[in-house]
Length: 92
Image 1 (tube, helix red, strand yellow):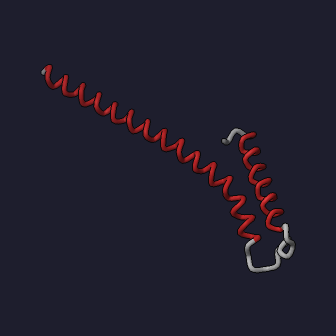
Image 2 (cartoon, one colour; image 1 turned 30 degrees about the vertical axis):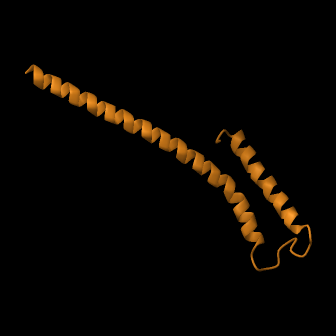
Image 3 (cartoon, one colour; image 1 turned 180 degrees about the vertical axis):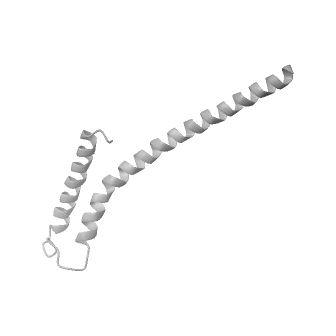
């Protein structure tokens, strides 16, 4: 009788340990997913700007020599603005 009680107790303990490890792994995965989501939000802005500027139609600054640098500066400013806004609302 005592052996059965001990076996049930150990089974419960092992089950609880398994749940604890599962929760720890799930928590770490949530942190990683949050970081990846933050990065994808920030990287989306330069992707959209460069994608729209790279189409085969007439776009601003296409014929001017410093056009590439102007678009690059606009992209950096927009990305930094997004980063600052996300930091301000404590999303990052």
